[in-house]
Length: 308
Image (cartoon, rainbow, N blue to C red; front, side, top):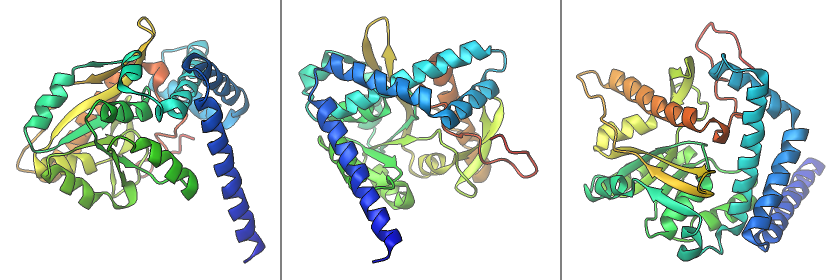
């Protein structure tokens, strides 16, 4: 075995050991203490990860040009706290019962989901990296509504398996982005539910350019293609922290009315733009809970300058 492969293998084991230890330690704490530790880790990330800080400020300047630097800094600080809280919730998730989870999570619009599910043509939950996205699908499955999740494999296979074991404890299943098309179509034909995080940068041909905060963003078109092909319901779903209640609220919106014309490719573009506008509207309501440190506008239309 080459020294490079040995180094990579040792690094992978160390990464897994750190993640495993972190999950065990934080998971053993009372929830309030775990969230305090998570918030502290978020503060450290805010302080130390300068590159992500710069990306976040650039994104916020693009999305909210009218805002001040101080306002953007406040949003980013709140985001890191939200991420720290989500880390804490993930570390404790495997031990939550329905009763425990219901003490700090509630539904809003569950009837929209149930009505869409009962149509029998499948449900595509339109979501993104807003709020506590890891906790949302876990809570929904804990309450008796398991679902599929379209995700990207983590670079470390051992960490990937650890994370997926927690995600899938109550019947959820993972559809990996590198081979999800057949699984997604099959799930819709079986009347199942699948959540899709549709707010990350893509590249053509998997992505098409649609407006996002007034700037063209390369966006996954797969959700629109599957919805048009299968007749599945598409409805927004986001788990958001409500400070006034000190609770997370899992919001389900009404199913979206899809654009259907005689031009399938234009329909895909129009519906991808529709889905993106819905995500944007939710982010505008809760700007301090979206993942601004992701390079969402990295892929540019031909001839446009780089943003980052």
